[in-house]
Image (tube, rainbow, N blue to C red; front, top):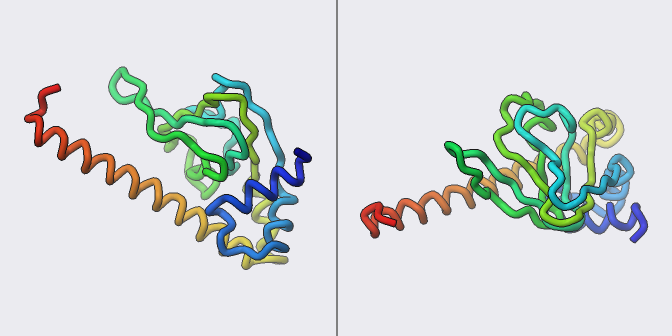
Length: 165
């Protein structure tokens, strides 16, 4: 699939662009670059500055978000095409706030949007900035809701079993 088609197809399937019109998605799509990752390769690690200030959108393949809890690696989420990563530093957070490791489970393609390229739209197309940021908030809210539901489910399980495994 040609790069431009991959970018547009991915953006159309992402919560990032739910409120954008086709022409706005095309304008935004021009700012992305496509990167390939091999299975087992890390996209992001806690404290790493490799993609500092960049938003990652999974275009194809399977990517897993994990976190170290004690001495164990726990799976937080399997990302689907259109899902986002790197949100913390993209919106101005510090790399020290990153706690998840993002690893390619299969060969994959991701879209990368550098914040400085995104911010270049502030004067010419501020509506795109506004609606994309709303999309990021919706995506983040979905993550929080899913994690809260998982926490409640685990608490209920532990309560019902008396904490015995």
